Length: 77
Figure 1 (tube, one colour):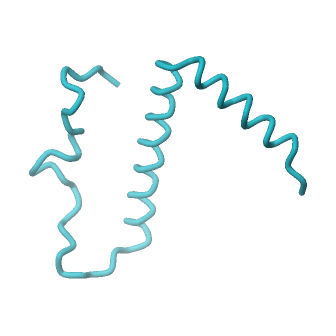
Figure 2 (cartoon, one colour):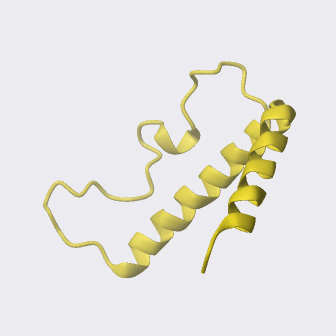
């Protein structure tokens, strides 16, 4: 992912006129495939944001990993 010049610069998907999905003002039901596509894109963006945060804050990422490991060790099935 190339670095952007401005922090508040919206992603290309948010720019006007580049939205690949039609507006849903008519209240039409979206298909399961569309919903899954949007969800997959959201989860990819979320994972990308986590990876970026882990790269720029390694100490916090390590602490979070250790905390998660501790939770998993103490969890009772």
